[in-house]
Image (cartoon, rainbow, N blue to C red):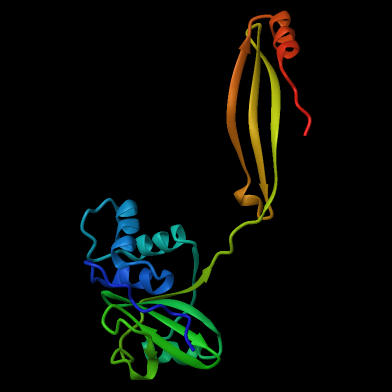
Length: 201
């Protein structure tokens, strides 16, 4: 059983958007728009590998470059015991390979459906590059709190109010600005605090 999606074919029929469609299930037109946002081209035909990898990242997939055999056949032999999904670059073309419990599946914009890799007509093609693809898991929200910071600037009192959001994966942590307040004197600041209505949950 394969985890690859059939190509969700839209108007765009090229291999780059098709690879992303195979990974995500999105239409080739949606995937082409992601690539377009990276390379700035309105029409997506030939795609550079670096733009394809960046598009996969934006769609939630990490891609790790790994060693490959000289041919697609040799590459399949090399990865036959390493379960996973791979983007394989052959001359002027991209394909997706999955290894799943020693079964190897192949899909691109020509086959449109995943098929046993042994049936592919591309087995003798030279492999230019190969990337193992892993879907990133969504971060879990750990906390969200309001943080106020008081600063002094040129005699004024500045209060910055932010929302501090923390996840279980630190790289997703963020601080969102809510408000910036400036008070000319300490008395103005104290009056503001006194007039605030505080509620306890």
